[in-house]
Image 1 (cartoon, helix red, strand yellow):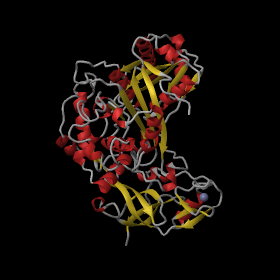
Image 2: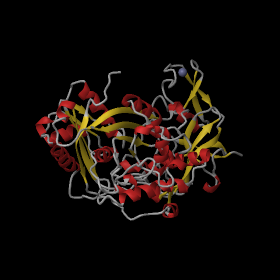
Image 3: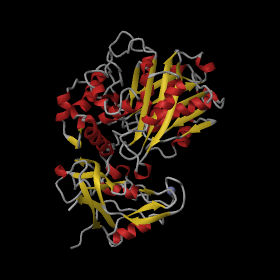
Image 4: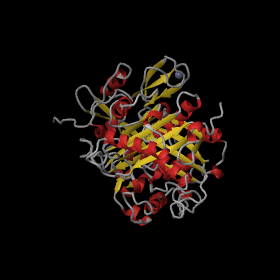
Length: 393
Length: 137
Ligand SMILES: [Zn+2]
């Protein structure tokens, strides 16, 4: 394979920090995010030639977004594979830039899940207001009352059965994320919590409790990705893409062992491309739709052995100062989760690699290499996994 | 007694019609590939393993074990909202494939991984009969 290391860099970011904005459209949130991210990079509308977006609510979002922005991109990618879509977008932007097709790509997302009253995790098939099922696979699944949280709970139950993982260990993930959220003024929930708080919260889908589940918010953001030539002249130090890996996990005709998630396939691809090892990773942004998602992902990324995730996440090891700080913005569990959170993983990894929080407890000291892994869909049926490895200049 | 089925109903395509026809007769069928000697679930018009066309319908024993499950306490969808708590499960059939189902006719608290279960059917409409699983007798 062609060496793609440092073939593209994240040069501009913006998080639309709203957690509730019933007065704005999703396109407006994306528009404002794109403008601010380009300002952050020191680039303009005329520099953009690639447009990458995913949405669960805007029909034909690639076309409609280009229309709204009055942009005529020469490269459009509407890959929509759930919450991890934006790690896929970065992977694709890297390839398009390396091939010389484009120089500046914008990746953007927004959602009004909270002001729209969307039951992201517990809505069941009715959550999309679409009662007519496809002949397959829906007609063999949705008859039985699947929910997103239920499909993660099933894997949590299996993990507990196989490896003795406990609810208290899963709760450690929520506690660590809340600790980080307490240092993020934009986070939805900032008051510290304990393991007891989590295991005593009401059960949503056994064995997952309310506080094992991510929050529901509005929100959005944008990431600007550029070629090395452009990146060198941008406002901030470039955050280089070292490696990217993509994967889909599914039921494999009813025979896949779903205790292994897509990260098991995508992680080796990203590490091989990047030419780094797990010991080189200073911090990670790990999609935390639910606490079990983090345990499963850390195992399948290779930070610990399968079955040891419960132990790995315990004792504050996920906090800044611990063995592997993750989700220093507070994650989906405490900060924000508008439905497809993957873009926020790229935003916080970039902030960390820019050393934006130097002098505060949120900064991972001397952060040089970060990993982001987005998971979209559901662990218990089918999902995507996108791993990217990023490095400070 | 007449009841109105208020949960989602399947849509039926040509490649899945034999499955739903069998359910109406009280038989659980799955597919087996003559070329590569593999069972598959869910039903489809090709062999998912070798991509060949020689898949045939075979009757499953209807017996299996609970591979994993969750007791659902919250679901906003009409039909399921009234049903909580209910057991959503993946059952591994004796033939080796795993399918989504509900474990019915038992207390949700009694369900466990490895539990022996067998198929049972509920008539949803005159056209549609849906397979579920219950503790093995
Ligand atoms: Zn075959």
